[in-house]
Each structure stands twice: as C-alpha cells, then as structure tokens.
Length: 470
Image (cartoon, rainbow, N blue to C red):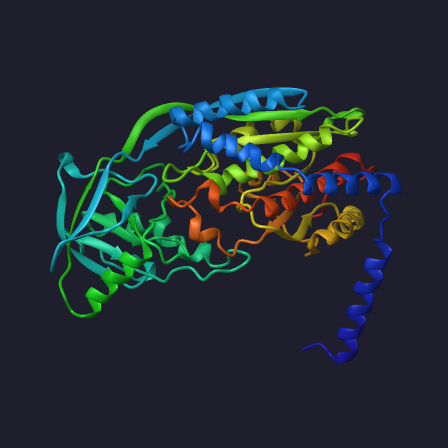
C-alpha cells in the first residue's frame, strides 16, 4: 500500500500534468461552437429525421427489403440536406428471418407465453411443434456444465435475473451470455430447444430479441426462444413449487441464403483538408419487433442533424465530416467490418471517430482515446460541453461505439459521448422500441454536444492519431 506521502506526490504529478496539457480553443472557434449548441437546442431537426425514418420505413431487419428501403431513405434524405456527397457502399451478407413462432406452457396447465426467436435461431423439425418437459437451469453457468447428451428429448430453460437499471448499462455483457452462447451448450447436451430469460431490465411482457454468437460459422439447428421477464418469473415459481413443466414450441425461423446490405455514407467535404475525416454515425438496421426508434434511429438522426447544422454554417470546416449509417449492425457489425475493409487504405486519414448507439437519453459524460499530446485539446472541448450537463470522464476509454470497433482496432482515435441509459434496456430489442419513447429535448441536447464536438475536431489544428500503446 502506498504511503500518504506517495499518494500526495502522485496527486501532485497528476495536477501538474493537467496543468501542462491545458489547451485554449481559439475564441472565434469557441464562439462558433457555442452558437451551434444554441441552434441545436432550439431545433427539432433530429426528431423530424427519426420520425421520418420510423414512419416511412418502419422496422429494418438486416438484409431485408425494409433495410434496402432504409438505404434509399438515407440517400434521399441526405440529398435533400446539405451534404456534398451521398453514396451507398454495398456488401453481401447471409439473411436470417424470424418467421412465425409460438410458445405455450402445456403442463401442468395451458398458458401462452410471450417469446421471440433469437437471431440465428433454428426452426422446429419438419415444421411440427416440439412438445417436451423443461429442464431448469438457474444460470448460464449451470447449463455450460451440463453433460453431453444429458438433455436428450428435453427443452432447456435458462433463468437468471432481470438486468439492474443503470446509467451506463452495466451488467448487459454478463446477462447477455445466456443469449449468445446458451444454444451451443443446449445442443451439445442434446436439447430439442432452448428457452432463455430475456436480456432486459423491464417487467413487461415484452420479449427481447438479439443475435446469438456463431460457433465457428455454424448456427443453431434448434429453436432458441427468449421469453419476457414476467414469463420467466412464472416458470421459476413453477419449478420452485416442484411441478413438472411442459412446453410446446413451434418456429419457422431460419437462414434464407445470401442477400445484400450496405452503408450509407454522407460527407460534408472539408475546405482545407478534405482527405482528413472526422467520422460519426449510427446504424440504420434495427430488429423487427418495434420500429427501431431508440436502437438506433435516434443515433442516425442525432449524427445527421449535427452534421447538417455544421454544413449550414457560412463555410465548410477544415476537415471532412463523414456520417456513416451502418448496415447490418445487429447481426454482427457486418457494416462496420465492411467499412473498415473497403476503406482500409484511407483509415490512416480518419482523424477521429465515434458513434451514437445507446438511445436518445441525455449525454452526461465525455471520454476519449487519442494521442496523449491531444489530451489537452480534448479536455478543452470537454470544458466547452460542460454547460450541457456533460462531465469529462477520462483520456483512457477506448471504444467509440460498436460500429467503430473495427476502425479503432486499426488505430483510428475515438471519443465517446456517453448517454444516460437508465431505461435503455427496458426498450432494447423489444416491441416497445417506438418513437413515443424519445424525449425531443434530450435528443436536442445530444445534437448540441455532437455538433460542437465534431465541429471543433474538424477545425482545430490538432493531431489526434498516434497514441502510444502500453
């Protein structure tokens, strides 16, 4: 344990380092950024954009005809705004379709449950329903310990706890394991189907869908169903009372061959450094249970609106601002991977990247992962965002958002404007992901933060790349 003197010395060094990295934004740039903030707070543009997307297109399952219509919407909307370049960059992908599904408890009495097939789920054999007794597992860890063949002819049910609501969404990763890898162990043990508690923090009978993980390119051959938290509670009580529970499951979910998806790319071309790119965006696809307003129509709208407000200024920013509406995010970051591959030769010119993909709640924290010498400039941007209720977190938070991961792995610097996700996992991947859940004022605060941050990053004479790795 460090002595008090050592701790004080460490604190003094940290204070000195902060003083050394003090950076002052050019007053004219700062005034322009504050003007963008004020304009964004008074604008309904982002809400209008997400209303248009969710109303005119609706649910946008990756690889579907609806996602193709969403790309057309992106091009049409971008062309009607102030972007200088609008394009679609296509890529091939396998297409999974939900089909029809029914899950009913048949013993000790009949009761229909509220469930949904998980992405990558298989179908009922020979189009007939599965009727079997369930084997209860308190957690995914118990299922992973099941012996090969021990579930022959049975249906595995993996319980767990509803996620605890939190501002950061903490707990999602751990809870999500039953959704992602449960099928592999259920199949290995011989189960005819797998049922899991939905990964969500709500207490409504709204099941949460989501993608499972692939097992070295193979996918589930059995139906894999997520049921709502109240229904999972009901099965738990039945199990605890010592009753035998039977389920009947029918599902037509499955893979339908190869199809096309694509990323919509919208550029505000820089006036001095057009080849240097500040990239922002959201993902255009959504799950098909709701209209994808929260996940991630809001991110699409926030970043498009922020770029549009900058494009309306008297002159273009020094660097290019690029908005990418990523395709097929929900099924494995396929659009993000395609973008990183298709733009591999120019990723070194991507000076900063971030994504809005955590709903439409207010932004409360600003984090970064850039060249250490640029930390002072990042801190200065953070100070300018403080009146929006945003605190600076730290300079050592990699990420930037799910679709940024493939670029970040290639050295693209990132920042993150962290939103309040207290109710995000009530709505995430459910039928409740609809436009009425968005607060326009909170959304406007997001646009204000993005517009100011992106504008400054595109204007400031700062090198964000070149972070030394530990």
